Image (cartoon, rainbow, N blue to C red; front, side, top):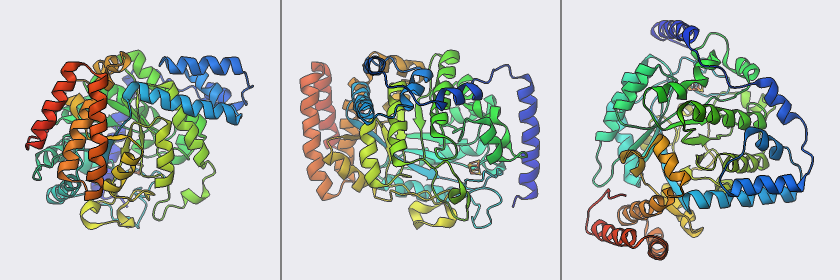
Length: 489
Ligand code: SF4
């Protein structure tokens, strides 16, 4: 239950938000009736139209939400196989065969909201509702960097304990914690929607991406799941979170939906309209899109009662349609999925995964604990085990954090991606950061096969990139072998 301090903070915040929204001129871009209509009817199999849409996807022009809706409702298996194949081709042509790795870090499960699907909801008496002290946070960072991670997404509940000042403070703690050669070089944030001035506070602390997930884009479903007296009950406050963040100068923002709390087709459409509206206003859509699937959580009966479960086959379709629709947007696949399914889903156009994840508050130090977790993970492998599998499949694991530190964010990043030039930087940076991992953290078995993969990629760079880039990669690798770290293009 909420403390008096949390209750007063929540009430005051709701009033501030409502006053802000009364003056906000932005127009809601989710037309529920239109989306329901678009996803309602099965699509008639029209091979000419499908061929045109797949050709458009391959040319990296993306699909409109209406075109995506048409493909989503195709029932023909052969067409889906073609869609899956095209999705992988699109991913390869934008980013190359690299997978970016990160770790989620849950900093606080204190939250004033009461979302029925969430283990952290304020009415859940079986959750501990606590945050990390600075010392505990440093210990978590040492555990994460000790495994070899360089980027994290820091996750916070909503409340007075997790306001913008605290988020900025915790980021400072994280960036300042060095662990031998280990350090966090990019912090992405997953936290509550903020006001523009508050986003500026977080930006000043050196943010990578600010993520806010809408959970569901259906307004009627949203109302059912978020109550009437919570900050999170206010749909438009959340819907325009990323717009306000961009207004504050945070160029890389991220959207997502919690798949499995409403019809998955509606959520895909909502994500596409969301990205399109940001593109319209700021000239750049979402930096990444996440599509976590609803998982069980301690003392959260909603999971079993809910009727909108998403099947594994639906997950394949969700990822492929997103990849065709927004070819330049990073797609993040989380450890909510099993190792076996992740192995398969990565092929459909995923560009980032978390690995070695532990989502209990303090869990990297103390191990898994359901009473401190927002939901259950299904992939509990170590970072090294995840990397081992990526290497077996020929992907180059990447810990690259160069883009935002070089100012390649927002529109500038998209320009590079659209001109086909981002992979000219992604693969070399993946090579450099993977070499660091192999030298400092890899198990003996991963070191042997990782070295072989790395030398194949170095040959690839020599054969396919400019002479200057090839020479620079060789020179940087020699410097890394000599003990230097954090070299990037
Ligand atoms: S989903 Fe987020 S906002 Fe809702 S109760 Fe959980 S932590 Fe709080």
